[in-house]
Length: 379
Ligand code: CP3
Image (cartoon, rainbow, N blue to C red; front, side, top):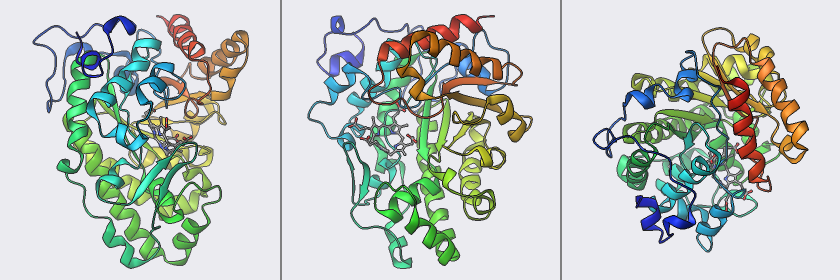
């Protein structure tokens, strides 16, 4: 019986059929970079490398989570952060959307604030709200609270990824982290924010403290991504979800150096690096320049236009509006065709939503979408 079924006490009969894993002896073990041919030749990794693909690969940001009844079931009574620290739960939750939707990649189940919690920042993830930080970071003396992250701080990540890569076989696992700006926004504001006013006050009012804060976060983020890659993640995504709040000039001056540092720190591993933010139409070029191999695009910019802004040498990821999934099947297919048409001339395309799956999305609509993209792009 697969480890994830055993550990959670869920009978294998309760679960949809497990995906085939790589043949015995071929399966990567914990702490090893999985390098099977089938994994390396997966549609997702090929698209990231801008190589020809058998079909356009699909995965969804927030594919694991509240849209899935099986997620709600295993999370019952377990707080979000606690579930991120339990390898058995992380493994099960990460696999759920792969089993159900047949997506082309898994994304490691965690949250962007997990590495901050791991170095001792007092924070919690409040249901329906998001990350809340007990004492915001706004003064120079607060920086001392942001100590280096070591692999021992997140040993559960290494353990969970070891379990996951064994289960996933040829399906790639995407590791991820929050980008320095988005993490700084939660730390400086103390929680979610619409206007990022405290964050911008610090960025404009004390540029040196701001630069030092982002540099600290870049170090922590890089260390967290390295742990995931060394444990077996085949790609990484840097989420700069809220950076669309900045002008291009401010982005280049005050954020890009830190994000560039993160990407440079993991370049030697040779795994695809994806860079994503929301409302970043004006920043796409700079976000590619920061060192991404794949640039994630939200639904506001068509992919052909995004490719002009990003320039050659990068794959793109996106970009169906997640709200479209609440419409009719015909409308979903028509809007999906628009995305695929705009993607036709791209060097590489990974299909995704323009932001995360909304919690009340019908999971069957997601399953149908995966199948639709696969069949309509089969070559
Ligand atoms: O499937 C996946 O994509 C992997 C899981 C994942 C989560 N958070 C799980 C989660 C990922 C990639 C994230 C990243 C994340 N977390 C981002 C960047 C992506 C984005 O959406 O832009 C951000 C900004 C956060 C911060 C955060 N954590 C928010 C805004 C929320 C939602 C608050 C809410 O309850 O509506 C969280 C909590 C969170 N992270 C949940 C999940 C599944 C919901 C918690 C729950 O189910 O109880």
